[in-house]
Image 1 (cartoon, one colour):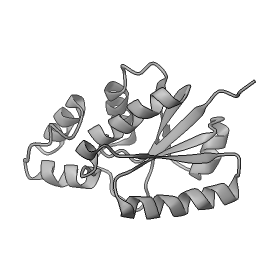
Image 2 (tube, helix red, strand yellow; image 1 turned 30 degrees about the horizontal axis):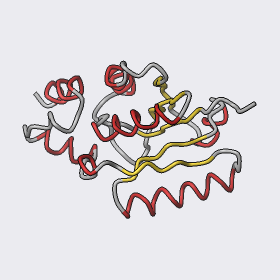
Image 3 (cartoon, one colour; image 1 turned 60 degrees about the vertical axis):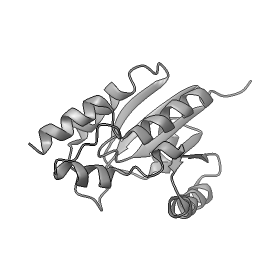
Image 4 (cartoon, helix red, strand yellow; image 1 turned 180 degrees about the vertical axis):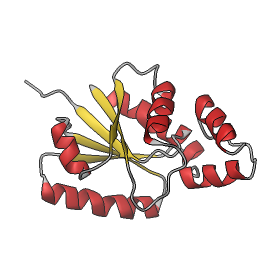
Amino acid sequence: MVDKRIALFPGSFDPFTNGHLNTVERASILFDEVIIGIFTNTTKKPLFTAEEKKKLTEKAVSQLSNVRVILQSEGLTIHIAKELQANFLIRGVRNNQDYEYEKNIASMNRTMDGSIDTIFLLADDNFSNISSSMIKEIAKFKGDVSSFVPTEVNKALIEKFR
């Protein structure tokens, strides 16, 4: 009997973009369950609180019945995946730099726990130029980011920078 295919999609998601949504939608077809793990990135100063990110992400993926969102403030991703009984990690890759960065992390994770595979999903061309950092920068200076983020995220960005 084949185990349930559970995938963890970890990230800071500050904010959750249409690129993230596209990755989750595609992963939801491939896996029995997709868990979006909103993690704290200690190298970044977040715009949204963890709870705000969770709420916005849940709204963005509400149409996907096999997707859930969790908050995780501490711990190695590979350990959290094990606790969640996830047997896959999902990573979106936009370009060569993303791939090289993610490949090294995947290799380290594989060395630490050989039972969890990392699956790379290449970004659709429509989303390959989207990054949360750029979204925040554009929104900060009152630029229109509505085509890059889900509707609720766009509203929240407008409110944050009001």
